[in-house]
Amino acid sequence: MFPILLSFILLFIAAPHAYAAVLYLDPAESTYNLRDTFIQEIKLDTQGEYINAVEVHIEYPEDLLEIRDFAKANSVLTLWAQEPEYGDGKLSFIGGVPAGYQGSDEVLGKIVFLVKSKRVDDISAEGATAEIKFGGGNLALLNDGEGTEARLETRNALVSISPRFSTQL
Image (cartoon, rainbow, N blue to C red; front, top):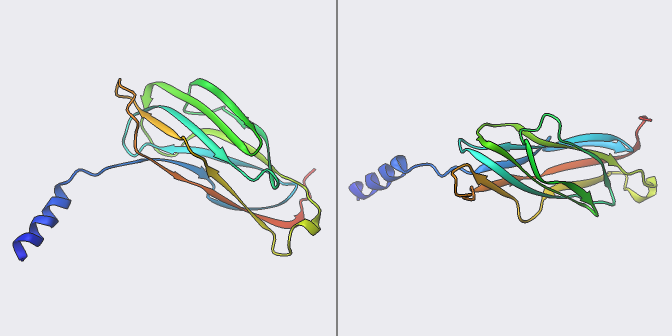
């Protein structure tokens, strides 16, 4: 029994780690008032892989949130095969880095959201929660000359909405 157990332990230690690039929204959790404007960053952690292209699809509750702008400034992406398009509760874009990119916490883009001002009666005393999530079809391609699809993990964000109105103008 011991030799079998030892074999399994050595197999797991010697096995190469299967890394997955992580596409995530930052901050992961936040709280805002009605009429607040806030920035949600889309970031990529390549987990040691060299990535040269991404396709991103995000969904958000359009009854609670409205995209006011998408900022590409300071993005690690330098080529845009599909410019950011948004509306109807969806955002999508395709971008790339010609020589490939390896790193963590790099910004792909910044979404400027507005918490829609609704009647206070429409939101309970506890407020509401809006999930900003990755839809289907997200891709990260390796910089391997063959366009190999990288393993990709996605992490969504939750926005708590207070029933109070913001004092922002």
